[in-house]
Every structure is written in structure tokens, then in C-alpha cells.
Length: 101
Ligand SMILES: [Cu+2]
Image (cartoon, rainbow, N blue to C red; front, side, top):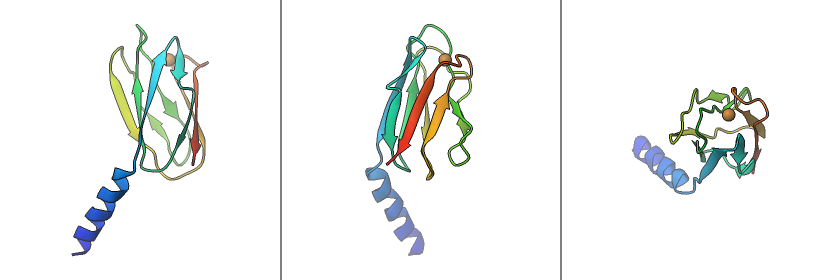
């Protein structure tokens, strides 16, 4: 019974989750600022003819998608926490600001 309630809660929460698409093009995250809430997904695309990366050292949302080659997509799920910045380990000038709603 308890498991069923938890499963229903998870399903209803994920119904409200948003998938935010971030393209990497011209060595830029597009868009370069997004507003998210915990449970949302951020999907990184790569439209450049070379590899990119996306990572953050934020203590609540730490992730590193590794090397991302042209035409692929990689996703992460946002955890509860504060605003954070995402960078590309290959191109230090790339910056994505993630704002928590
Ligand atoms: Cu890059």
C-alpha cells in the first residue's frame, strides 16, 4: 500500500517536470540561462562539429556528462538546491546559468 502511494506520488511529480533543451553551438550554451525546479530534466545537445562537455561542481547538483560528441544528447535530472553554473571543460568561456524557481 505504502509503495503504491509513493509510486503515484512520483508519477504525479514527474507529470509536472519540464525537459529543458540546451544546445551547444558556436562554443555557446543556447540558451545560456534557464529557470528550473527539482525533478526537471536538462538535455544537452551538441550542434558543433567538435566535442563539448557540461559539468558543475555545485554541492547539491554536481554532475559531469563527460565528452559529448556531435549530434548526441545527454540528460541530467535537477536535484533540490540553489542556483548553479554549468561550464564546458573543453571551452572555459562557455557558461550556463541555472536558476532555481
Ligand atoms: Cu565546449
